[in-house]
Length: 307
Image 1 (cartoon, one colour):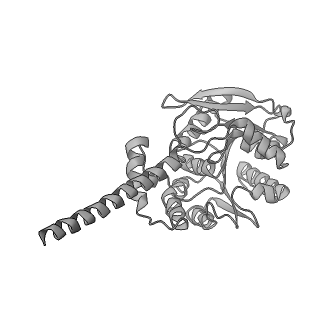
Image 2 (cartoon, rainbow, N blue to C red):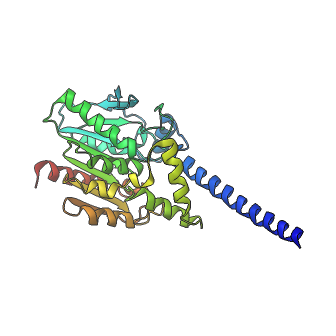
Image 3 (cartoon, helix red, strand yellow):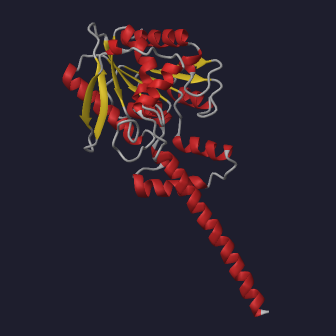
């Protein structure tokens, strides 16, 4: 009898150990997914949009000048600047998860055409950035603030500066708005309202319990020094009255379309929402380039002229 009881206890303990190890493994994998994205180099990202017909092969007219900015924590922000000879202002473009600054050229081409100088940069652990891991907008938003500070030091406090971000870059832009940043407008394209809620959504899509968020939170705080709750773009944007354009495709299933409604509701006193019909994730420009350009330029004009 005692033998069978001991066997039963060992079986139970073995099952518990397997469950704990599985929980740790999946939590660590989730943390790795967030922190160490699959890297595409800049040339690959450039060729991708050329092959899709989103940008021409020759964009030498941008006259991109390489710039390295030292962030507040000593890291180097790898970027480039395209000055416009009749500059109306400067727009900083932030790319999405796994992408590089080259992925923002599709936006840069029409913004430059309308008289804006362009600042592109590789976010942490992307492109040419040497930083080991990404923080999904936590540190990246601080980098955007440091870029703005650099540009204001060079071009003066009166220059118009705006932000445009796609996906993770959009989250970084919204996070920056909560840091007393000195810009005239911001555009977020398919950004998430809350990193924690996005991860819960992803876990449900994989038929996994949301309890793995807690394990991932532990490892993020242990190794990357931030929590999922620290990346809450919708709430951070609401701390500012800076004009915000929200762009989202109604067929986006990567960052769910409902996130745009959450962001708008929390920022409707200073936000405009543009729904790109038929667009999936980060494809709002691709679906209708002319309408996208019109919406963005109309918004910028109103923001600058304070209409």
